[in-house]
Image 1 (cartoon, rainbow over the protein chains, first blue to last red):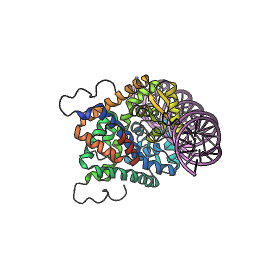
Image 2 (cartoon, helix red, strand yellow):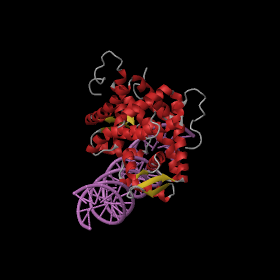
Image 3 (cartoon, rainbow over the protein chains, first blue to last red):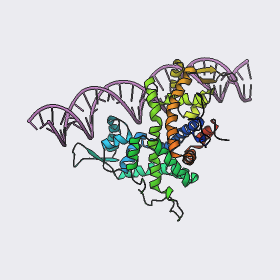
Image 4 (cartoon, rainbow over the protein chains, first blue to last red):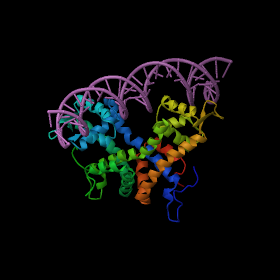
Length: 170
Length: 170
DNA sequence: GGTTTTATGTCAGTCTTGTTGACTTTCCAA
DNA sequence: TTGGAAAGTCAACAAGACTGACATAAAACC
């Protein structure tokens, strides 16, 4: 809608990928794809009585064993009270272990237990399978573009966290 | 974790983009990017006392004026009770109009009112700005890949809805 | 014409996950 | 050593999802 269709009046070059229509389709693609992205883990989580918040905590504890609650808060972008409820149930259920920090005893270092790692694997396997199928059918160049756009879409502070995680490339 | 790192034992070709590590990074990229994707509209919505659910309804009513409640339910993947709560407030607030269907009087055709369209523009402008910046910095080839991967990631029925929306290309 | 199905709306109750506010323990620095 | 800041926990509340039951109207079927 509004007035023009292009974002800055294309100058003869092929800026057609920046038209409002193309941007709207991109927005919708994100919406629909994210639904698929979470669908498989959601089904598994439900069987165990957990929600997406549990998945996120488990995922990032697995990726950064020994991480602190505060670091997790930064990554997940929720309040500590919200995260705490999730962590409490995971600890009670024996999926996560919370050890008092050595340097600073106010901190808690978080680890997955053996069954925590097993559950993480189950969730991750399902999500990776979908991702792998999408990657394979789209091909390596498409995947590189996919990653490039997603990284540009992140807020700067989240991109920092993202890059700190393993395998950001040499 | 688990045993191997590759999905199917790479055969010398460059299947390195299918390693579990790469897939995990893709999963995390989706997570972080989606946060950025919703951040700007979320701020606007909050000022008006609405949530993401309202945004989704407004977006798709704008994209398919006259759509029915049932169609919206399919697209959004929520229960009718959930959608109804959202629609009721939008109608009360004069952003959405619900007209009894002409062919089938059981149906309700949904439209944005003038102020509904204005609000949609405000939300969309913010979200498009972020998307445009990401697209521009990544470039056209990357955008094509981005779209390709996202489409492969969708569930089949959602991809159908996605393709029915305007401008899926000639 | 009468029955069944479909489309929508509503009421009540629950669950997950987010929020704010208040509190404890620990650390650190003036 | 004491006062403030930081990390984490507990309690209460709100938004928004869900299920289930039920109501109304219109279309479809037989």
